[in-house]
Image (cartoon, rainbow, N blue to C red; front, side):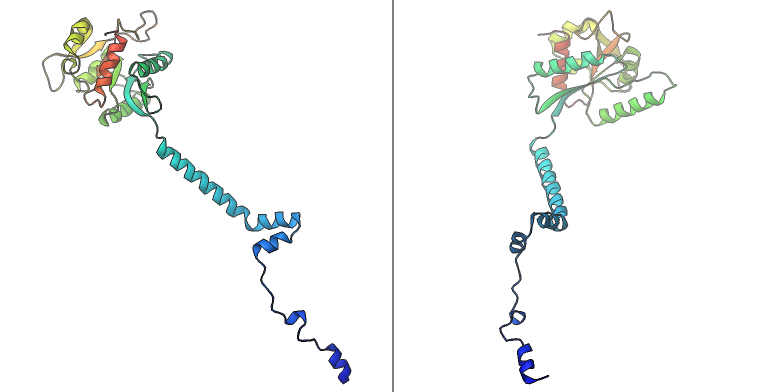
Length: 241
């Protein structure tokens, strides 16, 4: 090759390939792209990260919300067995008792549980067993304040020591007003008969024309956490001032 030709093909020191290349920033790259390229670029590099970030933010918001706004606390739990109270009456009763107790319904509420069925015979169905297991578990945890059950079933649990003596819970005036409705029985620990329950007949929640069971009885559980509210419940349903 002649010297002139070689000279002509030799790149000048200032040629672009000899210039140091500056690394483009993400912002510069993005600004030079077409709209379609921008969409593709976002999907390839940021879509998954964005979804993960959104899920994380939602999770944090949910946790903070639940911490700042906890579920309402149950301040009265009434377990009504064997359809002692029908569901419609139970719902209305829960609302009325909440108003009667002047509860802040966003923080406190009343539970009227009508889902239990308790048998009193030796032959028990799987539903009876499940109900009894639920009842005993809740009773042991002190979650039930009042139990309402047919007389025969109530007697069974009263003898096992499920209920407080009414004389230990009610005022002298209430005992005097309700004396004719008291249910008396013995317990395993106390052979002397005492008043452990109240027949619902004559109360607001007793319907003589439609009561689904015979002789329902109400009692305050022995380990009630809200026995004062249980007493107020009795005042309300028997219209005692």
